[in-house]
Length: 392
Ligand SMILES: Cc1cc2nc3c(=O)[nH]c(=O)nc-3n(C[C@H](O)[C@H](O)[C@H](O)COP(=O)(O)OP(=O)(O)OC[C@H]3O[C@@H](n4cnc5c(N)ncnc54)[C@H](O)[C@@H]3O)c2cc1C
Image 1 (cartoon, rainbow, N blue to C red):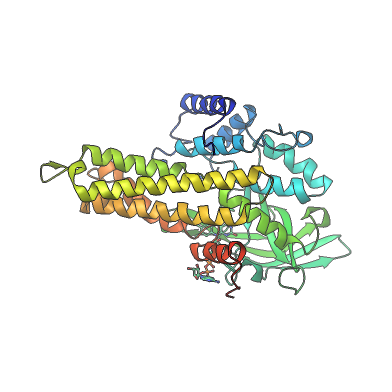
Image 2: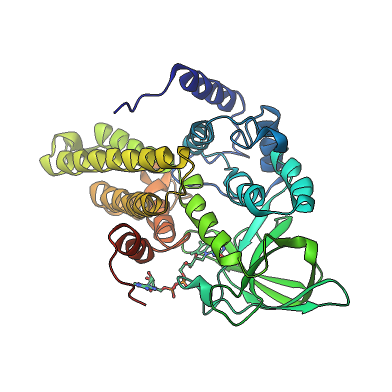
């Protein structure tokens, strides 16, 4: 088994790193890149995304007929990882979720409109699956879509929650109920976010991130903006969730968090003694390093399955659970090793490591929830990898 990159892949990685060094900017990159930036909210971040597009780095693995280069998916992975180490925004939603699903299932009109715009880095998406009574069990969604034969489209009414990016995205990728059948009654729609029928309210998380509640008041969507077949939305959502769990989850932020903690431990002292000499500290750090290596290997397994053109469902579930829980273990360890001052916030002058781990501690709570909770990942592993019976 060879875990090393091919020389062409190493050259590409170096090119990306050189580009990121040359384009370093606090407006675009988070100086504590332990926090993964999915949002492309500001004009500076949008301009950065267009620069990535100009390099030909968006949709590299897409078919040539849709503007891609048919390069191996490993290049998308190398790009995502490098961006995450610099705290730069990720192109995952458009390229990895919406674009790939449209390529597989979308009609010609959707392909013609969306694919070139995604590849040029021009549009941002918000993803709408969750509702007040439909989170882990997303197939219980109740947002209602009723067909209007006279107008040739659907009228949507109801309520979504946790729609990150709804306050600045251009398009909404939404699952809605088109019949009573639980799974075969869900259809996917693409709707312009500036539709007058939307009402958007902010929700702030423990990690200071903004997400949103979205109310739908007679939102009309033409038939042409149904993604794939009516009633097949749940299949596409499941595929897209598998893609999300690895397309949008690089190991870089966890790696940088641990790197920062190791640097702190090397320099810090406790009661006049170097912290690095303390056997408990050394043991904790060594264990976290081994855990990080496990995360890298799980991620390589996901990528290797995806490169065989398989949707890596159980591998992605294992990786998502491990990666997000490891982030929490590192933040926990940092608070223990740094001591009471670790609870100082980033804007407080005495805060050790600029308050990075206080923020991490809060932010990593969210990581084990978004994209499917750890319990849901365990259910996927139990059912699909081990063949154990369903528990709900
Ligand atoms: C910051 C953030 C951003 C998000 N962004 C988006 C977004 O952009 N678009 C979107 O559609 N959604 C988004 N979500 C929603 C996210 O996918 C859901 O929060 C998640 O799926 C969990 O659903 P829930 O919050 O309703 O919790 P629930 O499903 O109510 O779960 C509550 C608890 O019960 C456990 N549980 C539930 N079912 C089972 C089971 N069968 N077996 C064992 N345990 C179970 C869960 O693990 C959890 O601990 C976001 C969430 C957060 C926190």
